Length: 283
Ligand code: CAA
Ligand code: NAD
Image 1 (tube, rainbow, N blue to C red):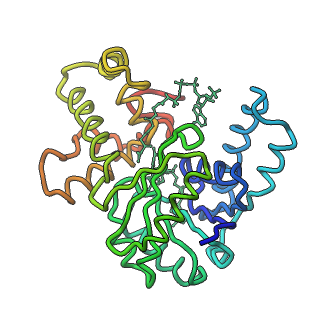
Image 2: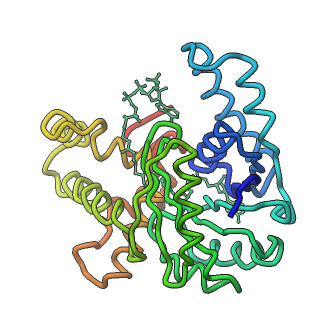
């Protein structure tokens, strides 16, 4: 399957990064969000990243301009009619995603692959909202997308082999390393990462140590580039909570119970770096 035009839905931290690496690889990209200002914010993040690359001498000004010229803004889902591949990166919520996939299924041509960047939600269930479950797949990028090499590719129950092969080859063209997994809650990345983050939050909740101490221990003791609480703030505490809820519900095992402190912060609107407050202050 030949992919030329990619539509990215959701211009937040993941969607903007995905749009950037797709445009850098030469694809024509439509970046879509619910409102023009959200799309422009995403394009702003991309420009900032590209400017940094120019300053560091990795890119020249004309390359930067040509990358940006390959990205078009969208607030209408009807633009899916030109896409060969749609990559969805909206909020980690099954109802929102299935609603969106139903509409994409109507607007996108029959050949279009519909991929989700979900962190944990079942691809099979998202696929079932469409009339093309064989063309639905998980394409899970890591944050920050321009830096992290992994793309976890998740096969839904009915994902076709040629769709898997196409996504594997697009991932390689994006200079990423694809790794295949089957469709179970949290896949591999977040089945392993998120319980560690949740346990770090429990450690603070139970008064075992401060956030600073927890992070220092994991950075200096385990050589992690960021401590788990800094990483949770970076990912978004809302996203961390939704992933833990998916693991808890999906496996029915209390070892995945989200820490009440995580719930409290999300209820307070403390979502981490993106809201300027989480385990740390970013004001
Ligand atoms: N966007 C683009 N580029 C970024 C960036 C961002 N948000 N943050 C950092 N960078 C780039 C910098 O420009 C720099 O590039 P050069 O060296 O080429 O100039 C490079 O990354 C290193 O940055 P810094 O020197 O400023 O900082 P650092 O060495 O501490 O690295 C980091 C930053 C790469 C984010 C590092 O701290 C790290 O690897 N953290 C862990 C990230 C991680 O675990 N991600 C996975 C999260 S889980 C997930 O994504 C899945 C999910 O579903 C939740
Ligand atoms: P974010 O909050 O930064 O961005 C989400 C964007 O989606 C927002 O701009 C929002 O306006 C938009 N949006 C919400 N509903 C929409 C709709 N119906 N139509 C169009 N746009 C809509 O979130 P994020 O961190 O970029 O996460 C997005 C997805 O990527 C989630 O599924 C998340 O689990 C996954 N993910 C996140 C990370 C991470 O570290 N944050 C890593 C890998 C995967």
